[in-house]
Length: 249
Length: 289
Image (cartoon, rainbow over all chains, first blue to last red; front, side):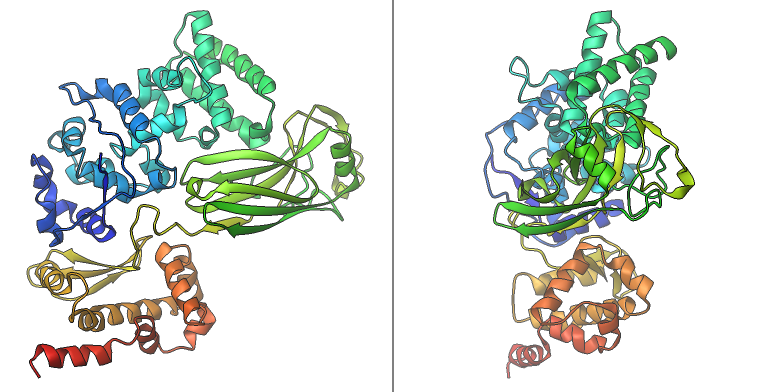
């Protein structure tokens, strides 16, 4: 699959003129881009190729998020983190190879503030860090990147599958917390919660899950939790889980 | 990770941000060398406090270094030793900035911790320290990492010409607030004409540079030298760093004091390699002379 990214100038023009182009986001193709930029060459070929693949497009597209995370991440796993934090790449894919997917998954016509909606889902609307979780395609790749566990030989997507039950209520607050950038902390946190839920036949409510995130943030203020031994960290998390489950609904 | 002085601990912590210790120091000196694929980082770790040194020697405390790049969601720690430490980080894991901070942390629970170098305000107080607690915080240098311009295969320029909508207004507007580029805004129809003329590199290129880029850069320099606060507020932007490199290539320094003493128009022409001569020649040849 040939991946193309947007030229910097084309990206700036498209982003800068969203309010004049809202109607174009209902169009079945992106031929309109060249009229907006007055340039026939808005895309540049990415320097390496990827396997051919399509994302699943259905009438209930959010139900396919998990499969699409696996599809996008597994097929584009060789992207480096630096490349995958570049707006030109994701905005390019949103306006090119995955235009149809984007229209189905992030339909502009349903949005109340269409300009904001386009900016958020088709471009990077916030700081780069947050935008990785809000752009319609970057979020799929980064959810895969952060939850894929190459050391889990039975199922490297175990944590992805776990979080896919509630990406909005649990996944996004989790990835908004700085500690989640440390794979060691993230994996300890999620495996412990998952195991605790399985052992006690419960599912943490959003409130309880958020309380656990708060605890990790609170410990980070006092301790260097990144440097704790795994055994000590596991114990802290499990003790706290016990408290949270018994004191929060 | 950035530790601010507003973060307070319930026990003394050795750091240049606090006065909890006297006649003591914990700091790191960081050197970074960018190679083709990796960033080589050399960290010299300096501790001047006998009580903390003893804790480290006894295995009750350890030195860790925390690396973080917010943009690529990279965050991890490595153990350090006093003196020289060397690490390599893949360039592809970092984008723009690597934050480094080192800590001395308790490796086990420490009962009744006391240092003779505690600030006198602490008297003879002793403290029970929990495993993982921070005992010392180093200075916090940032390592700027210039994004590999060929990361995706593109070549950057610091200025983008973009259209704006207006029926009557045909002025040029300069926008310096974007992180990546200086935006030169043209009325939509003017922009289309510009695009038609400026596609690829043509005889029109130096003429367009003279008309648009030179006034834009002149304006930018005027804004930058208006006052030091304004100058500092743009320093972190990518276009500023690229401009700074261009200055270096011309054996100049993009520095407030130096900028103040330079003529903005003259400087803009130097940066764009004086297109006036070529513009006039091309105009003559386009006109058929």
